[in-house]
Every structure is written in structure tokens, then in C-alpha cells.
Length: 74
Image 1 (cartoon, helix red, strand yellow):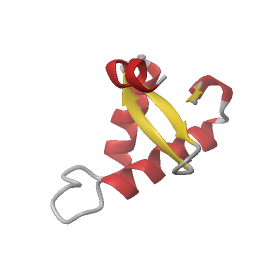
Image 2 (cartoon, one colour):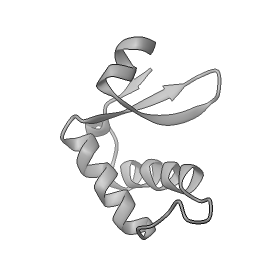
Image 3 (cartoon, one colour):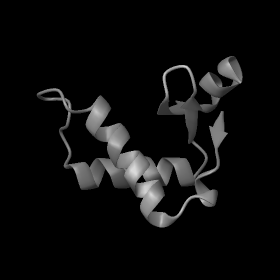
């Protein structure tokens, strides 16, 4: 299910993206940029429409997908 980032509060939007970064870039060496920097980049990509927030009810988690991936799952 697609989540419109504009429907979220600023804090909720940032929190979802930060949680994604921590869950997916926390391995040693994966987080070359700081949490704040990586979060900012991903937020900008979401706002530009390059990535979308997607909630997977089976996994009960939010993912970031590019447009091609959305077309496959949605």
C-alpha cells in the first residue's frame, strides 16, 4: 500500500525514513554517510517522486521503492 508522504507530519515522515535507514544501512560499512545525511537524501528522493513509501501489510513494515518496483507490486 502506497503511503503519501505529504499526508504525514514532518516528524512522522522523518521518523519513517530514519527507521528505514537504521534497518537497512546499519551493517558495518553500509552507512558511509551519517544517519542525518542519508535520511535527508532519501527524504529528498521521496519528495521528488524518485522513491515512494510503501507499507507491506504481510511484513508489517515500510519500504522505499522506486517507480519500477511499485508497478510490479502495486
